[in-house]
Amino acid sequence: MAGVGFEGAVRPESRLVMLRSGANGGAVRARNEARQFPILLATGAAVYGVMMHVTSADPSRVAGCFGALGVAMAALVLRPFVVMLVMVCLGCRVVRIRVGAGPFTGVRLFGGRVVTFRTIPITFSAAYLPPPRQWGRDLRIMYGTIVLSPFVLSLVGMALVPPYARVLCPIIGLGYSAVAAFSLPEGSRRGMAARAFGTPTAADDPQLAEPNWGYLANGLIAARFGELAEAAADLQYLRDASDALGNGIEVLIERVQGDYAPVARAYTAELRKPTSSPLRATLVARLAFVTLLMAEREPGLEARAVAFVDQTLSLRGAAATSAEALPAAALRALLAGDTVRCLNLTQRQLAVAASPLEIADALCTRARAQAAAGRTEAAYATIHRAIGIAPWYTRVGIVQQLLGAEPSAMDLSVADLTVDARLFEDPWSTSEA
Image 1: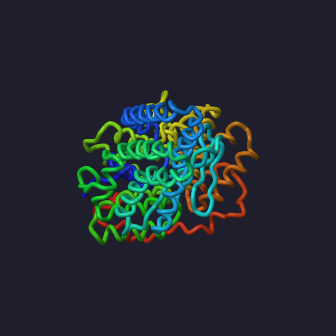
Image 2: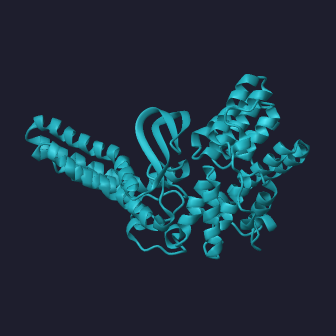
């Protein structure tokens, strides 16, 4: 079986556990821009040539040409909604929605999905989770829809523009589709068109080739959303199938339940294996965060935890603000007494949070920083918000006790944090390592 990462990333190809129809991360975006530039240049040259030809005999046709450009732009705006319609009709779960571009303004949990808001409401993207048995099929349908929908929508929109300008619609639509076709989705070495229409192999696209990958993805998302019984069921399914993909689900459940020692051992065991530099950085960041969580629960370990983090994790410059390093970086800043930096980093955490677990982690650290800065009432309000979002997360209760906050209306004592202990009895279980 292909390797899979704890909490979704032990191998670079496994990082995409929520299907994204919108923007990718910064590194992926930069890589795609280099691939897309020649296509955009060729499309722009073709559009310019056609417009010059059409308007040379009659300058009044400029308005019609711009109308065709507007139709093409509308096709691009409508694409994510078409993708959402297709995915919902397939029975996929919408787990995250991102609205707007520009500076981050807030994140909320609506109807079991994370919704992130930014300043300028001109873009829309979403992340989907197909049913486990339909994982590969629905993933390919999604990428096929992303690739083909701009061209199809542009053809439909041709009826809205004058006949002399209609040829511009398919030209631009084809350009959009070509850009999508050659774009590399986050976590994959294959372009969208290759993933949609090509034959995957375990070596180049395990997400599509591995028949049980959907159970891994479903279990990881379920654990991050506090659906521990469902996560345990997916873990049991993979155990019954003798599939080691379940390791990632097990480690995540252990972290959610505050069983940090086996989580740390699992990350340490992975770091002993030959790994790529990006993967190693991810594992080190997660190990550092778990180490700091152990010290949060047992303050006597704080000095040792800080020394370990300072020796193993670079928390300078861009390395401190990567999505993986943010949780550890924020906690480390708090322990260094830099509450301003800690609060800034937790704001970044909230901006990239894709699940209630990640939101709760940011809020827990923020509450501790607010308390350290003497803002006790704000700290209580923040931890009570975390309780409302993730009452099943053990860390929320730990931080609540550290702050001495009164129980909120959402009392942690009623949260069901139990998972069948037999799931962790297999010989290869990380809790026994």
